[in-house]
Amino acid sequence: MFGSRLTIAWGLSALLLAGCQGASGDGDGDDGPASTDDGPVNLDCEGANSVLAGHAVIESEADLAALDGVRAIEGELQIDKTSFTDLDALGCIEEVGSHLTIFGNTALTDVSGLSSLQRVGGDFIFSDNTALVDFDGAPALTEVGNSLIIHDDDAMTGISGLGSLATIGAAINIRSNDALLHIDGLRGLRSVGGQLAITQNPNLCISSVNQVGAGITDPATIPDNWSTRSNDDDC
Image (tube, rainbow, N blue to C red; front, side, top):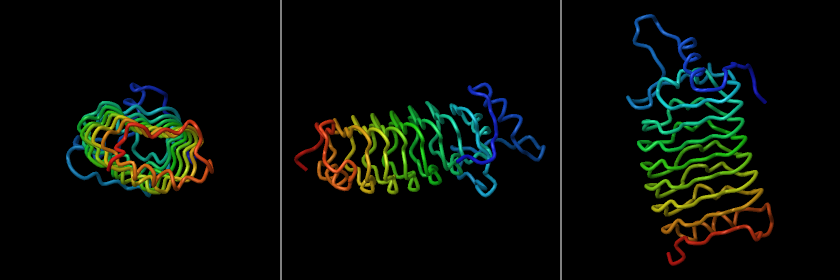
């Protein structure tokens, strides 16, 4: 599944070291990792064919150097509590072998940088990113191996991305997104291996929830552990 391998030891300090050793430049001192805050990021994904063995923890722009030339990550990818406004520097990543966690990035307003992502082997967790209005990213993602979890994204009014997502191996949990109005991007979902819990989204129109549920053919019948309570039933 994975191609040529770039081995990086686990942990943030190792990632920083790898970033310093692996960064390319012209020697004038102004080169560095692709910025997610200072304008468009120009990525050459044709040359991104390395596989990062281990976990990648991204907490600042300096950490992004570890992802230069990386197409897939065997372990987890965590983007936690950064000041990023977008995820453009992730634009070449096609696969995360374990969990993908995007948590607590309170300035994040654009997730279109997930455009190449096709598979997440573990959980895909997107939470507490309080400035994002529309989750319109990850259009090529077809499979989440474990659970899809989206919660406490206070400004998010819609999930219009994820249009190719067909299979979730375990649960789908969308909860406590106070401004959420629709989840129409999930209408392509066909298989959910475990619990479906879309709850406590007070402005989420139940018709949008039902349209997603109607497309799921596996399981063929709604199991007892599916819950859609505390959404907007009167829209």
